Amino acid sequence: MYRSIAFTGKGGVGKTTSLVLCLKFLIQNGNYNKILVIDADPDANVVDLVGKNVHFENTIGGKMHEIMKRIKMKMLAPYKDSKQAIEAEIFNCLLHFKNFDLIEMGRTEGEGCYCSVNNVLKNAFDIISEAYDLVLVDTPAGLEHFARKTTKDVSDLIIVVDPSKMSFHTLKQILDISKEVTLNFQNYWVLGNKFLDNNWYMLKEKVKMLTEIRIKLLGLIPENSEIMKYNLFGKNLLDLPNNNEAYNKAKRIFKKILS
Image (cartoon, rainbow, N blue to C red; front, side, top):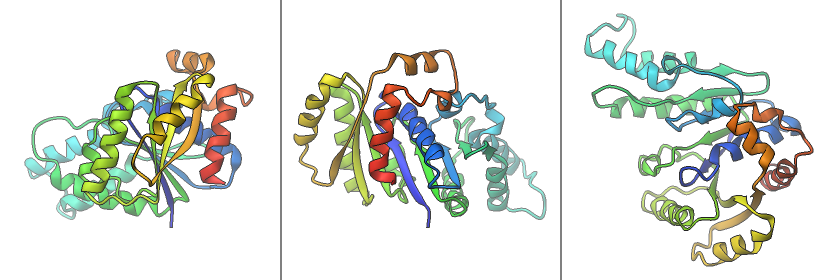
């Protein structure tokens, strides 16, 4: 059985950066041989941070757009139904890196109902994920994926917050929705990002104010100018020097749940 960790939170808090730092630690740690990263954010930010360009037609959204057209025009191969066609295209979307595989969801495009497609996608992801030891998921900024239960098999939910009231408001909404749609994650974590070191006490106080007893404070990744430069100039964040201060703190943080 694979383990799955999802990074969520308000847009702009640093979910993707946190995920890639976690991925860097996993690769160096070597405890997981087969790692899958699912970028469920339509903006497809993971590829930007690992030095890869992916065209829309090579994302799940792009493939599904073509399949929807073929279904509408009744142009599927006679030996394939829509379910088989969708599953085949998902496997074609796998990007193979040296130490991990990546799937980019991309955006949906065009008219038509994608409900049946989304149901097949969920089942197909379950099948694909079984081939891996660990799955990391970068979720969209919105909360729709929780309502649709697309993250129902996640073992650890990491809610990333920054020093803003809005990010904690989103955190509260995520906790409320997870109760409403009975998403029983094994672990709920709060990860602070873009905080200054001397703001650690503020983060602890904010988490203490939450009435949700399931949630635990994972740690704080401080704001870091070197990471900002990597993001701004499109450099591969996996190449960040191992002695980077923020990365060293991130390693200690992720070791809590991955060792």
